[in-house]
Length: 267
Image (cartoon, helix red, strand yellow):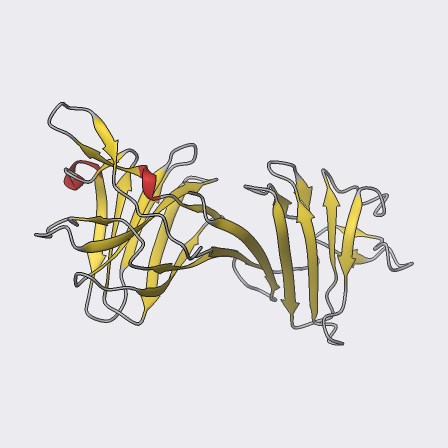
């Protein structure tokens, strides 16, 4: 079951900085999760949380976890067979410092599987996975991406208990960049001046839902969200929502908006 419910895009602008995109995923391993014999494990007493991973640009991505317990993470090609995890294994990591760190080169148009588990058996709790890379990453919770081969060479889904408590995962992306005199200028919808520098970001939501856009900078900043494309000559055209002040501080903006799956937006 897909538990991805929200993506918040956090835009941060600096002077003389380098572009950087972070994606945060927060969820929980509970006794309602499926169990398996993890890679190099002995018994089927390790709970796991499987995450389907898709990227929009080829490149190197870093996955780092954080929790209150010792974690184990393994990164796989899809499909992933729990009885032969080494076959699909790309990389794995663990330590006794409540985290794992995995660096992998990923390609767009391909699906990968990140298995989040624990170093010790029968352990549960909340965890966070942060992804750093050249663009944001689509992360979908789906334990059914893990299959188990039978003696008849067919594959069956791992047993998964139905949880009476619905645990939702939250995903956020962070984009850091800078504005300079090399950027283009436009006349903001809320201003009569045509000398405002701007930068656009294309947004394609992975699902219907409510999205939160947060911006921060060391200077006064405004955020504008458009459906489809942005026309700098007619800045009101396609405008959905805008904000130039968050709690009275002009160095922030916050936009809450409902977006539709696979529809193009521009900020």
